[in-house]
Length: 446
Ligand SMILES: Cc1cc2nc3c(=O)[nH]c(=O)nc-3n(C[C@H](O)[C@H](O)[C@H](O)COP(=O)(O)OP(=O)(O)OC[C@H]3O[C@@H](n4cnc5c(N)ncnc54)[C@H](O)[C@@H]3O)c2cc1C
Ligand SMILES: NC(=O)c1ccc[n+]([C@@H]2O[C@H](COP(=O)([O-])OP(=O)(O)OC[C@H]3O[C@@H](n4cnc5c(N)ncnc54)[C@H](OP(=O)(O)O)[C@@H]3O)[C@@H](O)[C@H]2O)c1
Image (cartoon, rainbow, N blue to C red; front, side, top):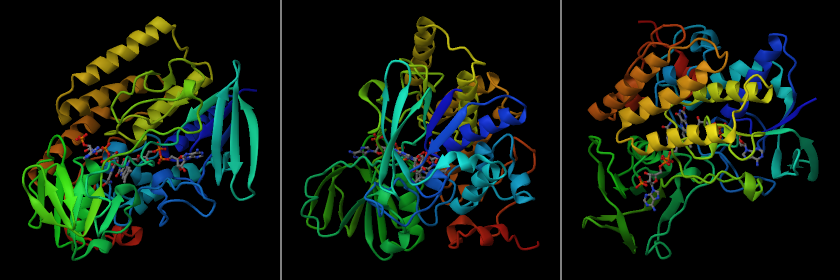
């Protein structure tokens, strides 16, 4: 029997577990599957942890999410085609839920099946080599402090790429008297109440960490971009300046002449694609981009078609794109989709990479990733979902952010799966301090 190793039980790992389960339900004979996750439970980044640094076994902590994190995109854009929000919650819910609500939703789908007994938890994959005919996968059971090696025909790499921080150094950091941290270790904006905070970066973490600090009472928040400013209309107490030059004592000095006294510097400088467990010939080497090279259909490793990567793209689309990738990968593994010869693969990869390199703005990027996801969608039996509506919602969302960065999370959209419209949340995001599932779902009667 074919044996498949899945590394990671975050959203991508869960997508492929679900895809095999659905095939089995249809009466198909599925491979033997073992999924490994270094955490004690599944859900990946969505499984919040207070820990930073390393865990009780000395293993690095993958979690990067923080308290009070709300979805930064409309939930309608990430809805599963085979498990709607209405089905999970029994009613329509607002469009921008907090982390705990999305975590509950992701798990709701897999809890209905028997995938959990396929996952080895607290187990870190430490080494993967291809011996010419199959993979030797070595993993460490952290609780029992034992290491084992098993043989697999296929390996699915689903370990995420927002867990290992990229940490640059700027002059003056060594002598800075305050706190310097990466957004990977950010857990609670309350820590920065009444403080002057400098945030480095100009992408989603910079935007949201800065907004969090402002929302929870920072005295001032100064965001420093390196190339392009985000350019939103920031509320009073927040500003965006050009590139940090150096720190001098507790002063941050920027390249546009700005000087800001600061208590803390938060590096929202992104993450590394990091695969310490893969041998060099199997390792994807890429930055955070919409079409990492060497992946056929964004999924199958060009040099070894038995190695699959899921979710390695920079992400507008998330959960339903992961599903489309997983359904495609499942069919490759089960022999229902034939991988073409190397010249066709090369041409296909080059086509996507060169299209990606021409993209100039967010709308074009949304179009690109929607086209990519739609192509995968047509190649498998992933259930019906309206990607044209998702494309439209993403573009409206982008424009809502430009209109007002403080209110875009109060908007509502309709579901690409059921058509139902998300009700307006009882509290605007700016004043909603309690992010618990209970408070979010308790919509007072109007
Ligand atoms: C701060 C932050 C906020 C985000 N907010 C949103 C949002 O609002 N909406 C959205 O759609 N997306 C959001 N994302 C994007 C997020 O990456 C995806 O939603 C999703 O979590 C990606 O799933 P994944 O399975 O690829 O990776 P992860 O969620 O990272 O899961 C990977 C899993 O692999 C395991 N693992 C890693 N290495 C090993 C190993 N060697 N052995 C065994 N197991 C291993 C980890 O324990 C983890 O459980 C956010 C990301 C970050 C960093
Ligand atoms: N739900 C939420 O609200 C939420 C919150 C946070 C994050 N997220 C998600 O988390 C994921 C990761 O986002 P991310 O922002 O951490 O990573 P990212 O999108 O990869 O962005 C990395 C940022 O770091 C900057 N940077 C890199 N090196 C730098 C340096 N030496 N000095 C200054 N800036 C530097 C980059 O700037 P340049 O452009 O200049 O290279 C870029 O702005 C995304 O999927 C996002 O959606 C979601």
